[in-house]
Image 1 (cartoon, one colour):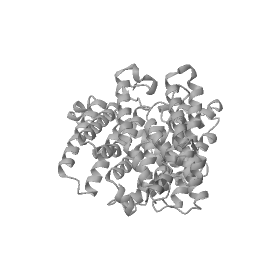
Image 2: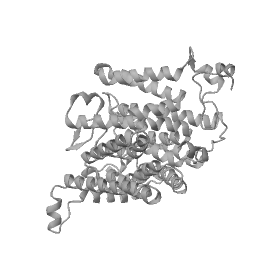
Image 3: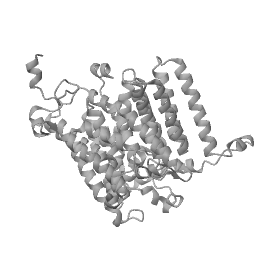
Image 4: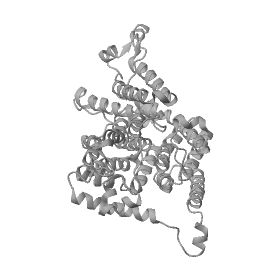
Length: 477
């Protein structure tokens, strides 16, 4: 390319994975101000609003609403930049406002990004999918899940646990977490490999900041208060959105963030992984730690080229962390085992009962389910009286609350993504495969889609492995 040709190019222009401009000529003209992309300006304004919403408590509500609007606009203008924004900010509290609005503010840009990418695929491109994008069946299931999940709150409206006075805030919560999980799936399965690479390269920085805030809140350092949830809940670390959702968000993020950092600094990657494991242990959540161990072990068996010293070292760390977690969670574990007894597993028994409840609720209401938190009212509030509000399974939760349509949509996305991961297990990055397996194990025993951090990261992990991995993708990975 000659000098004259280079001078004519827009300095902000780039190409996607197909070699086509990220912004077509006519679109660039409409979305630049004095040569600067409008998305950059919106991003700067959104960032300022986000910080102000956390530091200026009296105006937090207005600032959070403004940030949500900017976040949605950013997603519509530039999905890649919006995804970066969400990856950077979703671990943190959404501002000092109501729970529903706060949860929506954690993930708002990813919702706008999903809408833009859907528009690109169907209206602009005429559904001529790029080589890496998943099938229309999986995409339709993800869109259906996004639409049906919030409707479960309307179905439940008027129930004791779903009063009409909380309808709007609960709907905001539903869009901010469960719907955002499948919006995230759409974004990470549709962006090009080059765009995905840029997003994932910043994940280690985001995760390191989140872990720092989580530990600081757990230690009672007030500097972290504006950005963290309550540091300790029932003696467990919960600073990134309640203990178990915190652990799931960290566990899903850790393989991808660790792998991205490994390419730059192995010592830093080991340190990040170690701190991440410590935070999971402090949450006292067994499922996410077991999911991380099983995911890493499965990848080590599938991808046998991993050096043996890393496998042995990882196994030693995993077993040590699991032992420490069990001793923290069950202080009398050794004494009971020495006497031939087991610790109380009442919580696990209730999980299994909640699965049975999901099937029974869906059989009674196959088209609509029982509505949001219907498990709470099952069998004359048998589970609700024990503070079990949801079915602890990623798919069965949707089946209970949204009936067969939502249950089938969720199962299609989850199983379809995992099927794609298995078929491409030798080609996709090992860290992506590990993260998807972590989502699977967490989803079998809990609900990653319940809070925004774990929801967005779970959707991202499944979206990454749902992609059709081309030769060009493999070269860029």
